[in-house]
Structures are given as structure tokens and as C-alpha cells.
Image (cartoon, rainbow over all chains, first blue to last red; front, side, top):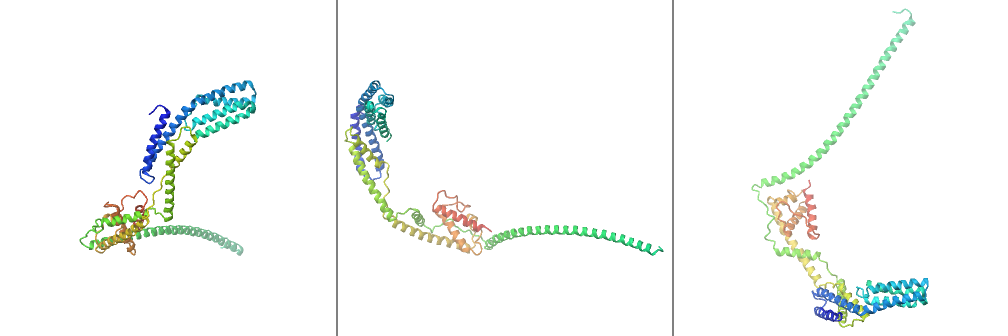
Length: 153
Length: 285
């Protein structure tokens, strides 16, 4: 098995192609179709997992960078535009940034990109806090909801 | 003797009064005795009535048992009179071929098989076509998974979902066009075979009855010593079915006619239950 996630994805896609060929040759009516379907399903899951690894490798650095940026921006906004009501938005954004910093990719199939979404939302909320004050929390909350929805499926 | 008439009269009245009192007390005594006697008598009567009732019950019981004995005696008598009591053989049936039994089994299977109505067959065919279409789509979706670039997330999601449309489904069984016709043929063949086999068995049982043969132990245990008076035809019908049951299901116990009760539901269980209740009826006094 190749160590590089990109090579591994190509590898998995190749073996999925082989499995699919066998499945197509058998046809839905044949008696060993269910068994072939199970093996092919395993191959599909492996391909999906390999793609997630590729995504994770690709998005780890950007996610970390955006999370760090969000933390820094939150500090600047907290000091420069101090407002008790805005602190709520900043705290939620910092909490989100902390969780993304700790684990930038997650473990679920669709999680790397969902984490990118949520951390981008947190950054946007932080930058908009001087304008929207505490209401910017809603942007982060929407990001978190999207993240949870993607992760649960 | 008193000279004064008044005094004499008084003395008389006094005596009469004493007599009256004595009579009174005697009368009372007699009344009490009579009441006592009446009570005793009614008690005795009640006792006797109760005893009579008990005796009546006992007589009924005895009558029943006499009836039972009578039937036993008749059967025994016939067998003894027949002299050399030859034994009836209900265990070996060389004239009933394995083929016939197989036909009966096939008929029973056909009866218990779920048959497709034409509408159901049509629906199933539709479902199969739908499944095949889905399978085709899913395979195509999986095919595209093999060459998608890693960052086209929405396409990955779409094709992955399409692939999963098939993995949790099962393809229905293809309905057999001939099932219906074949089942009908098997049913009628089975009915014919049962009819023929029944005739053969019944003939042999009737022969055994006519020749006063000694029935096997299992037969007498199940069916009683002889047909109950007035119900010979029903009795013969049940006896035939008992023998047929043993033949069909390979029961060889020398004492127990039907063997152990079958565990699973089906023709055998139905027949078993019917025979058990019918036989119990024939053994009753």
C-alpha cells in the first residue's frame, strides 16, 4: 500500500474498477451478484476513505492557518472594538478555532471540508463582529450546524 | 258418704277437676311424643333420599362400565370364536409404491406453497426491472468514482449516494410462469394418489375386520377394540388415515400409533391433531 494518500487513492480506484468489472460481468440476476455487491461495496468504502485521506492531507494546513488567523483576529477585535455583547461571538469563534486547531481534519468521511466551512464561518463572524456585535454569533452557529449535519451523515 | 248434697257435689267436682288435669297432662305427653316421632321420621326420609341419589349415580357409572365391558367382550368373543387368531398386518404395504407416496408429498407441498397470482407476478417483474435499472445506475456511479478528481466533493457525494441506493436492497425472486400450472398438476396428482392409497388401506382394514383378525397393538391402542356401534364408516375412515399417517411419516412404533407430535406446523401437524382428537373420541365409552 502506498504511503502517499494520492497514490493510495489511485490504487483504490484501480481495484474498485476491477471489482466493478466483475460485478458488471455477473449481472443483477446471477446468483453470486449479492456476494460481488458486498465486495464492491467494501471497495467503494475504501475509495471513499482514501479520498477523505487525500482531502485531509490537502486541507490540514489551510484549516490550521485559518483557525490561527481567527484566533488572532478575535484578539484584535476584542481589544480594539471592545463590547460586552460582542464577546459572545468572539468566544464562540475562538472555541471553534481551538477545536479545529486541535484536529484540523476530523475522522468522518465528509469532515475535512466541513471543518473548512465552519472555520471560515468563524473567521467571517470574527471579522464582522465590529459591525454586527453579538449577532455575528449566528454566522458561527450556522457554520457549526452545517458541520454537524455533514458529519452525522 | 256425705249426707250434705252440696258437699257431695263439691267432692265430685273436685275429683272431676283432678281427672281433667290428669287427662290434660297425658294429652300433652302424647303430643310431645308424636312431634318427636315425626322429626325422626322426616330425618330418616331425608337420609334415605340421599342414599337413593348416590345409588343412582353409582348405577349410572356401573352401566357405563358395563357398556365398555360389553364392547370389549364382543370383540374378545369374536376373536376367540375365530379360533386361530391370525394377526392383521398394517405395517407392510408392498402394493403401495414409493412413487405414490412421493406424489402425495408433492401434492402437499404444492398446497402449502405460496402461489403467485398473475398480478403479483407482474408486480414482482416490475420490481426486478426497477432493481436492475438501479443496479445499472449504481454501477455507473461507482464507475465514475474511479476517475473523479479528489476535490470534486459534491460529485463524490452524489455518486456515493447513488451507489448506496442499491446496497441495502434485495432483488426479488423471479416468479416462475409454470409454478401455477405445475402446482395444479401436482395437487391433482396428489389427490388421486391419496384416494388410491386410501382405498387400498381401507380394503385391507375391512378385510381384517371381516376375517376377525387380531389388530396390531398400536391400532387397538389408538382406535379401540372395535368400531363403536353405528359409526363403522367414520371409524374406518379414521383408521385408514391413521395407517396412512404411519406410512407417510415412517412411524414404526409398535405401541404408539402416531408417534411423537410433529414440531413444525403444516400438513403433518394438522393431520396429527385431527387424528388424536378423533381417536380419543372412539376410545370413549
